[in-house]
Length: 609
Image (tube, rainbow, N blue to C red; front, side):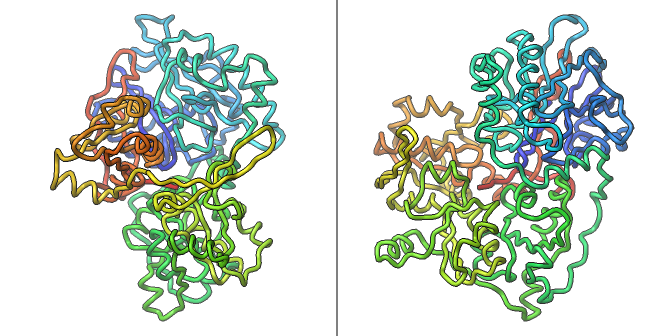
């Protein structure tokens, strides 16, 4: 059984056989594992860490105490808590399943994969838990350890782990990784939750390199910078995370005072959406909306150990306190109403619309425009050839190149990151900072000119082009109203992988591969509009853009995807979901996923930028 935590792109697992369960790579909020074991009438016999995690605090010690089970981990992990140490060839028996462990360093020195066999066929592996050594369409990055262990040395070890061990498995062996698309533990991960050794052998771009030097070069090229919190989470996991009182009452609000506006003393994180933040916020606060990848962005933007204050509604505060335990952050709380009622000053940062900004650019009166996306995003497509690219995680330092007395407009894809950038610049002394409303997506939707890099050798040129015909974005609430009031008047197509569609889908939707949607002429005709949905809206927008050039049929895309739909219409963002999988060689789990817990325990999906 596979469990997904979308906001961290984490997969964890429960192997069940003969009413015995084995949990693999659990997250810190362990309720779903306990509930699933109870539902399946299985006793948890052990918890296994495939490697030393850095991107989240694992739930191994929580589960050990709650289920009275041992922790299985590599003897090379350096764990400072009691473990059942594993080495090459170690085995564990769970019911009729035999788990054999192999040492596969590369992402970390202590990485191990677990091959699962049935007792009836002890020589034929059925599946493999690969941790962060191998993902679907990618492999684990080797540069997160630091210290005396070089990334190149670990990349070389990764080459051996594939060549000498994993590749020796039969093509039919299913692989189940610890992460999916969006994780910073690798690059270019697929959305597919599982694969096989044969599929990866044929299609994984990293595994096509048969020479060690080429593999190392490919693996080290273009890796995104690791968030600063990774090293702290890794240390906590090694020491053994302290228990969390998940049922603790909300702490009392701190007293609002002007000292909270001092960027030298506090980091105030405003959890509201960008539009609410813009109408008035605590001076020098940073907008990291709870609807997005809150855990990761707090870990990137807020220094470890800083005096953190969370500002938002009661619901947002409760959710944030819960979710931030996953990455080891905690803070005081304060509501915007308390600040306002205290008569303290607020900062208003009215967003600029795409039309207004374009008009200013045409008149030669444009402010300094700062694109806060990654360089790879900026090089691909941008709203102007004259804007600056200061990535968000380096914006505070790079802003010293600008004049804080001059007006600045920040830009990203959807206004999530650029709204954060407003607060970052305010903290460094800028007084006239605005956010591009709706981001570059709104700019493109408005049909305004964009600039795309054209590569020719080593030179890069930019040329303007007019994007006129694009899919219309439809909000979660608008789609819900259509489904209730006008069923049958539109075609709803979900382009996520079939495994995700089976787990959760909208009533009346069909499932199709993106390539089929693009190439099948049947989608170009129809009496009503075609509405595309995916996980976060990004792939659906790309597919919709291609279709819009081919047909007069109205094409619409669910804005921010099903993560936003769930968050806005059905649940609280940030939760872990279970995906039923036949991961036991002898006993399949129940075909019905266990129900989601209350917000105080687990929460549901979320979207990000």
